Amino acid sequence: MGLKALGTALPPAFKDRMREQLGDEYGAFIESYGQSSLRALRLNPLKMEKKELIDLFSQNKGLAPFFHLENIPWEETGFYYGSEDEPGRSPYHDAGVYYIQEPSAMLPVNLLMSGSSQGEEGLRILDLCAAPGGKSTQIAARMNGKGLLICNEVIPARCRILSENIERMAVRNAIVLNEEPDRLSERFEEYFDRILVDAPCSGEGMFRKNEAAVSEWSEEIVKLCAERQQEILKAADRMLKYGGTLVYSTCTFSKAENEETTEIFLKEHPEYRLKEQIRLMPHRIKGEGHFAAKLIKGEGDPSELSLRGKKGRASLSPEDVRDFFQFADENLVSVEDSVGITKKDPMGKALIRFGDNLYLAPGECPELTGLKVLRPGLQLGTSRKGHFIPSHALALSLKPGDFRRSVMLPVYTEGSGEGDLRIKEYLKGMTFPFEGENGWYLICADGFSAGFGKLSGNVMKNHYPKGLRRQ
Image (cartoon, rainbow, N blue to C red):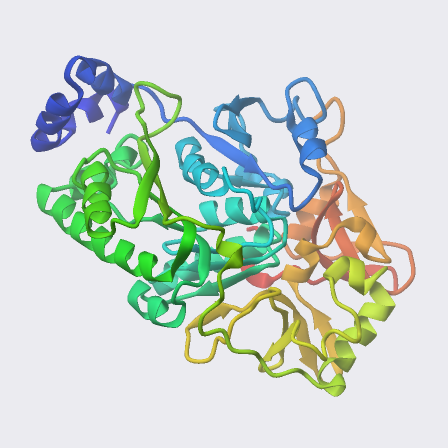
């Protein structure tokens, strides 16, 4: 269906409601359906210092010939990209240098992370409806590896995609769960400093981007979504500390799912106050439809309140982590600087095992027994017959200076869009010739880690995961 035809194909009941809702602006709103949706990406400061990264991608600098970018007003690291650009095909995407994200969807996290004396690091944060991971990885970038981020998604298939994006974007301090909100609220009473509820909704704001949402829309769907949203918010309330921040967001225009949902919640929970409420409309801004409301629960500093129900985890023995530290001594410049632990610490509670897999848990990792856990932190690797095989997640989380041996493969060169073909071959799972000391290497797309390789006899063996290899 063409864009112009889309405006006339919108459900009549939807158009009637929007005409009443917008008044004189209705004509401009309908005309916006004749325009193409905008494309955007958000840079990942977990891969490089934020200022350096922004400078690298800014107009007339660094990569400007290969990416035609324009700043997004409400997100410092967000950029619109040109219709001629294909950032999803660049090795930078595989290396987690950026996340391709609808521009309006970048707003709620800025509301969540702004305006606190605590700052943005060292918090306990929950993204309750997190898949596919755009907002979770945006939160993680602001947390800068400090504190605890729990990313939850109730649908298993979407939860796997969420987990993959957490890995790709080099997030170390996140736990990925696959649970119902009510079940989580039983385990995490008054636990979190901040909670994002990017609620399932009727998707009206995405009609221009996703035409399938038009045919699936109905007034009954709007009603069902609004009812479900109230239940999710009640669960979120049970998990938020006094003094904490709750941001509720949707990608719909319906007042029943937006302002009315917020009003009902505030009436039923008088300890909350509405701090801010924003609508993004496609005829007013360069983006799709989005709604966000920032709610504050009571008064006080959440960091001064006690954590309820936290249980400790059992320590690992020196034997449990011997193979990892042997690998670290041989390959990491400094395990303390690179991973944030020492040989004395594991015997504390930083490292946990799930079967043969070793994970670096977030600093305040809670007891996870009985929960559906897809990712209990940063996967460091797997133990196999006394040898430690480093994980792809570890590679992506490292910077080139963290590893003793690395290979820099240029992605772009001046005067052309082509760089070293070996980076494309590597992402396809191919080996390539290389001279050097045998052993593990960090393979980098320019200065960004992309995965591991292992040199043997002048052949760089490929350790890029088979499920991620480009066709």
